[in-house]
Length: 387
Image (cartoon, rainbow, N blue to C red):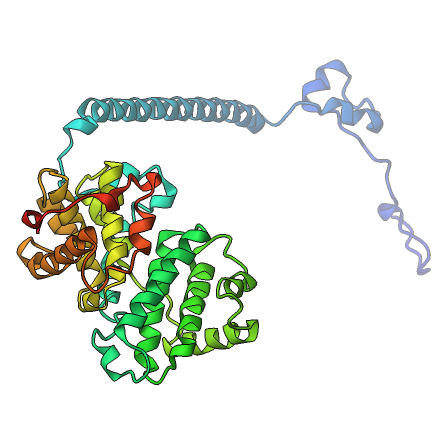
């Protein structure tokens, strides 16, 4: 019988710690005798075999990796093949289109297209030319002066206007200004005189020189100085008079300087009629400049005067056809529609050629176009049979 103590600090013998008994692994029992102790520090070295499941996982992982690689390689090959296929299709399409391309000379002919040949010229604005001239046709109706405005003037008459325009032609030529500048200036004169019926004749020359001053600033790259316009009047006015008249004139026309002129329309219609001969072009220019001097021709639109100038030029110079469908399309005028205007203009040209009539003394335009640089077209003799 074992002794039992009542002392709480005494540990019963049965409960005393026994020496730890270490068992050797199953796999190594054959190497040691039963009951032989094993060093615990060497146990970690004993259990080095991986779990059975890891062997399978490693094999599966390798197989998945190999499959993924094969899949990716297959996708790359497929993508390359697709790119090659699409590239070949594009090449075939380009080849087909190139084979079906129509040569320029075989393209559908448009008799009304007169701007395509200017596509390489930025100044020609070929893509906008048709729209620009369509706008000109609309605007010219609103920028024309009243053809009977002179009847309301008390101190200025038709003869004075003709003399003023004749003087402006000389000044314009002296300063080597652009043709369009002269036409704008004369338009400004008429529009201002229409609004100022009480203008005194002493200020008529000031209106003319101011109109040319405004037009040159509007149209020229290097316009003459204001002092030059005062000198050309033989100092009849001062600079302050020029600047004050500039304000009055611009206010009277609503500050709308832009106005389609017969010179602009003439160039368009010459192009439509394929008139390239320099002499013919200068003669048409002579006609539209000469028309500016005639007050009675204000009743005709600038586009009609331009069409008449081209028609008469081609008639007098024996060009064929005189009036083609293309010119009629771009000018909007048929030969019949020009009949009345042609009668008045041809009569004016005949009297100018013979040096007779009320405007026989208006010689600036004739002298200008009698020069060699204009092929002396104003010396072209007309006969009554031509009218």
